[in-house]
Length: 247
Image (cartoon, rainbow, N blue to C red; front, side, top):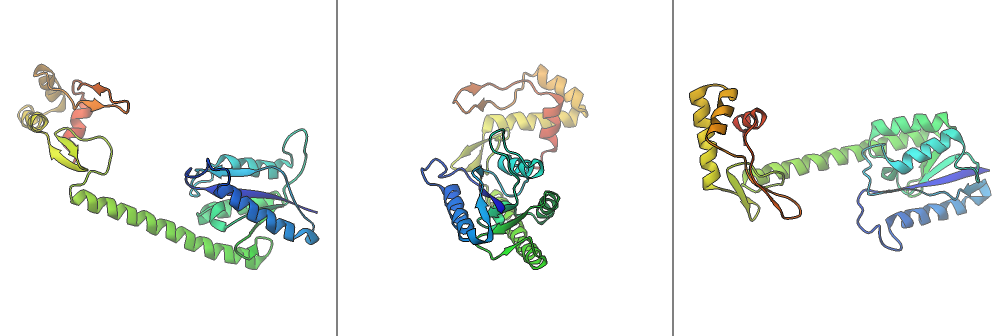
């Protein structure tokens, strides 16, 4: 008898509150596949290993770590005792999108005497050809992930060149209006004063003292709940950041 565990994953939490969500669909497809292999001695184990809202770019996933531990220990709780022989996934990128992480997982599967099968891709790690196919597919999956990341970085850089604000704390001297940075005249004068004073005094500690003497303050911030936090005195760290910030 081959005891099978199903692992499912979804990167975002969108739709997970539905009665039948993506994780349920993956599990149903895997359960049907396991049932079709009943003649081969496959049996579905009852425990669920679902990681909802977790990226495939890391192995630090609660359900995955629990699955690995169950494979290593051969036990789940005091009521049901079993060893996982086969891990079933809907698609290879549900398990991982990193070739390096896949190699680590295969080592752990081997140590536990387990292998895994992808329902939508006809292979498993029990054969050398299956491992070769998996490595090729994971190479493409990793390539796709890296290309997507590069595309996002390029888009953010292009948006910044056009003056669009891409999030984060708004720097002193600017306000954000319609996703664009607009000069705040009063704050811009504070920035100019700080640079001019630094050129005159020559050191950050002296600038800190002078900024304190002139009662210069940082930018007021509005918190998530809408409350306004007034500006505070400039510390040496804040001054160094302002003086060296290329933006």
